Length: 156
Length: 270
Image (cartoon, rainbow over all chains, first blue to last red; front, side, top):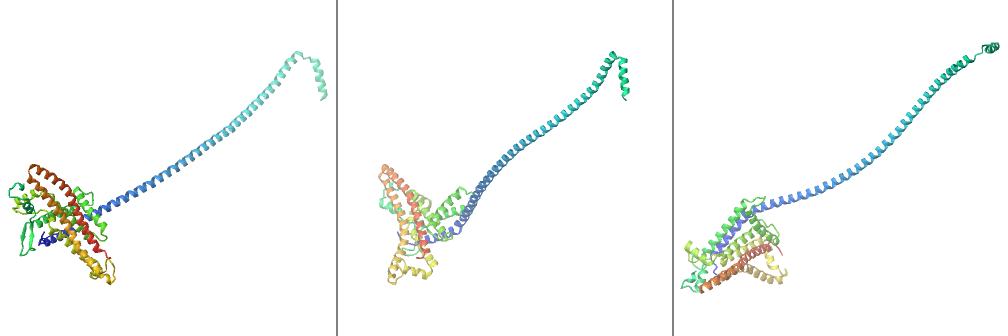
């Protein structure tokens, strides 16, 4: 193991190789790795943001769904109430109408009956007269009647 | 294979494998270049950093391909380690330097996986060289070069961050306190620390890789005892190679971590 000129030549070679690595090997790869790390970090951040957004959106959609459900339940209840109301109204209107119809029918019937009574009354008089005529035709005693008529004449 | 030659002794076998391909550049022991260490380490550095460069040039910030994913895995691993130790702007120097250390040392250590005798034959027949050591980190010059470079960087950052005065103040006043009576003790401890850091840094790696190589050679010697010995040696070699995977990666990792720790300590004031 003799120390000789090789020591100096190796040191020079070493210096040159260090210089070469410092100058040409290290920087390009460091840049590439740094850039990639940045890209990955950005990607991860974007993914995180996306996840957060998704969570927000799903929470929002759940809320909207719940609201909609509530609203639809409300609407259904309202509709049912309204339906009930309409039925009630219709029933009431129908009842009123029916009453009216019944009343008018009753009035007509009364009127009709009155008219019939009137007619009958008129017919009764006629019948009475006709009957009376028939009776009279059979039983007229001119003498007796003349007395009566005469008495009547007297009275005037 | 070489064990079949009659003139070969265990000493010459190991000595052969431990000889560098050297080229003198002047007189004296110092002015010699280990051509094998330098060639293999530069070759490995060029193909590994060339590969990294080729991949990162087409790097996309989108979905990465398999090649890019592999390189990213490596870079992220190193960056994570640095992030845990070094608190400052790491991308401009410390982290890429740690990557350089880890990749280069790992590749140089991994040369140990190549079968030592085959590689010797390969170098001999391809390049016509009789001596060639293929594991640059088993050469103390390499580990010292790296450790000393880190050491100088450490001093450079100490002065850059704290100023020359601040650094000298720290040499005298840390770790025990700023009382003048404590100055010698502080300085002594700091000197010991500054000497021991590059020594332990470099010798740990060198020792592990050198010992690994030696053990492969010793196991290779079993081939000299015949067929049964060859098979036995091969089995032991497999076991050691599997264990060596751990050592190779671990030592590269430790070397990188210590580099980061030393540079990080230089950035922190006491």
